[in-house]
Image (tube, rainbow, N blue to C red; front, side, top):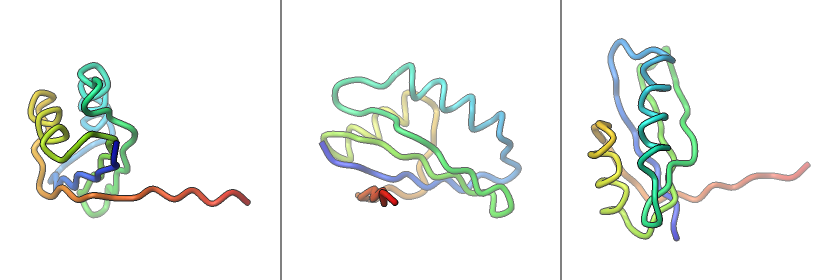
Length: 83
């Protein structure tokens, strides 16, 4: 499994909008693609959605089924620094 980041430019987005998509992504996640987290940058009207998936096609399929348009999809690597 690899990690991916979807960028969505979303004019007028609210936290409630993002939560609605998160619910759908979580509900529809499966063996090929799993929703992990989102980051809302309200001032920029941008949301990043993080996924773990077998490939980018699986992410795009999950996003499509959940009603999430993808402006950009890239392979990513999450790094957590342990203090």
